[in-house]
Image (cartoon, rainbow, N blue to C red; front, side, top):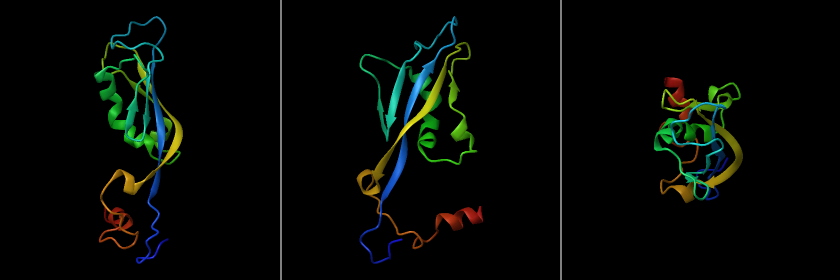
Amino acid sequence: MASLGSSSLVDTFQLYDLRVEVICPPGERILCGAKEGDHFILEGEMLHLPPGQAFSIYSLSAVLPLLAAKQRITHPNDWMSTDAEVACPDPNCKSKLRISRTGVRTFSHAEVTVVPLIPQGYSQTSAGSALAEA
């Protein structure tokens, strides 16, 4: 761990890249405009669609709240580690969206925010003490 006076504080963290893919049961009518295999990729905060492919905003709204959590390292027993399929938000549509972790990407804190890092152990309320009080 770096000392308080050290200028070499390590500021990197890792996130999973994600692939969100449409899964359609054979023979079922799909109402959200999706086709089997439609997908998007999430790399950091950037969402990428293949050229010429669209994605329903309603389907996107079903997975969007989960994506930041799925990008983070979680305990193997956490449901966020094991559960990967999300139902289409239309109750009459049988499609699902499968969220897969596809790789790991390393980011620099200084490159994604202007808020400076405080060396661990020197903040007013450390994460450990905040959790202990909860």
